[in-house]
Image 1 (cartoon, one colour):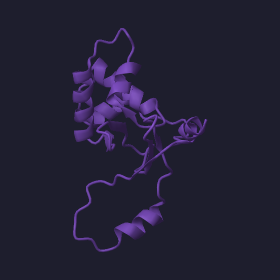
Image 2 (cartoon, one colour; image 1 turned 135 degrees about the horizontal axis):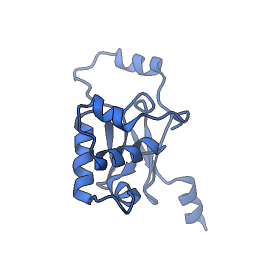
Image 3 (cartoon, rainbow, N blue to C red; image 1 turned 120 degrees about the horizontal axis):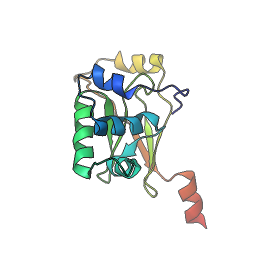
Image 4 (spheres, rainbow, N blue to C red; image 1 turned 90 degrees about the vertical axis):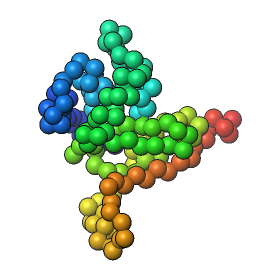
Length: 148
């Protein structure tokens, strides 16, 4: 998803969510802010600098906290891995494509406001708390690899 090279500020996002600005939270949030696609907790851990003291449990706790405060969105996959992305004005709600072979998730273009409004304007017998659309299949690279 193109964010036009604009990014949120990690410190301001944490302040707005009334969370303390620990080095670990800032580091995790900076990774999510800078990426142009959703990422798993395991990949976040791999992207952390060697000098930062953080483990898998801490990453999961931070992500859970961010999700509860509405800073990020969690995107589940059929294989049990959750992916995470920013939930800010740079990243409006949108659908995703998940390659079942390489396990890379990419963002698809968001719906226009009028498209979303038309759907939401229809009567529903439920309360919407979130929308999550994931299209699964094989990406172009994996299709080529399988045809060779």
